[in-house]
Length: 375
Image (cartoon, rainbow, N blue to C red; front, side, top):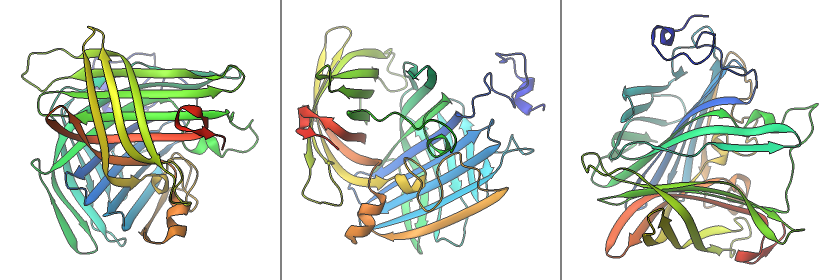
């Protein structure tokens, strides 16, 4: 099936652009953004998923207001024949300026949330190392990812209240990825061997931006009880600089993290409390950064992790499908129901400089460094 992209000089396989170079059903392309204000009153995450080998496109938004209310809207559709349209119901995604500026929209709908947000990079996209993992002889993940610190502009409406989003008091970041990945429908498919469960795991993604520089890193570790240490199966990180600075990105040789967790809420174990990290670049220079969460966005109901009310990324929901919810986060049982994969909008400090961004950190099972001995 010929697509408009087939006019471009960028083919990589002997096929048209409607077909990836693999038949793996797990092949996914995703566009994602997190937007939060610097005072911590609201956090917004939105994303699009493209699954050509499942014939599905889906979209979601999760909006948390003061950790008291969360709004969720999800939609899915049959991908073909409208494979070139990045729209799912009232959701829209547009590349305004390649590698620099994108736009996420949600038209008025029955679930009370709508928005029009333009996300503009303040520094060039940073290319992560390929994330690859084999499991029992099968390719489990093989993902390329590029991330970008940005500033947003536009508006968000929720239950009649409008948030005016501006580049002065709001911050954003975006993540664009493609490849074979363990996320979504493949976790709940029947008739296949269930995924491996390890003694413990740590997942940590951070993207921070200061006025004159930014940094991002992605760490995934598996605790090996027999060996008595954590095996790192993915790491990538770098420093990057604003447009016009004339500085090239600098790879981070290593990242050391010293985090604290809050276990005082039974319904939200291992909630990230803050801490510090030491970034060491390949030139030997170091930056010590402290981090403090100022807001939170629960992304599990948006399709990450396990299914929430019957939906997970990539799952066939029919030719057209949509739902939405307004959740009361003051209810401990509701917090328990959606706990898991979250994004913390954070304040970062390096010396006298103050920056903002996000921290994703999830510790499950055994991880002795932080005092956890099991699930």
